[in-house]
Amino acid sequence: MELKPITREGIPAALQKAERYRFLNESSAAESICLDVLAIDPKNQEALISLLLSITDQFAEHMADGLRRAREVLPRLDDEYERLYYAGIICERRAHAQLHRGGLGSSQVATEWFREAMAWYEKAEKIRPAGNDEAILRWNTCARMLEQHERPRGHSEYEPALED
Image: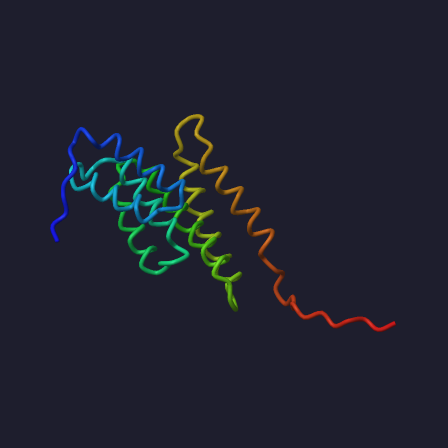
């Protein structure tokens, strides 16, 4: 089935609709809209960022494939700061998806993803535009998540009941 192209004039309204779909947790619809915009305007930065975020919104359902697809968008971003910042976003959202999925060892895996996100945010912080504290805010969020989910090495979840 051949997809129908949108018009160049319809791009701003399409991007607003994609944002609305993301807010409604319909990220696959938002992703589809972004792909339609990018078919007409392949370098549209707003569409690329929205596409990346739409893909990461779906990490809970499509973790491995989503990670690859989100990372494929990064080199298409024109701005170095945004490439670094959104590399951090990808890792942070991957960590959250891992925690949501749960299971044996998920906290340790999420910890590694949070640490990788923090490394990206530190790189972005060094070249951030004046007055832009987004990377710092995200780094702090990751640090707080690590405080909540990291257990000291050697800590056992099993604690025997004390007898009187």
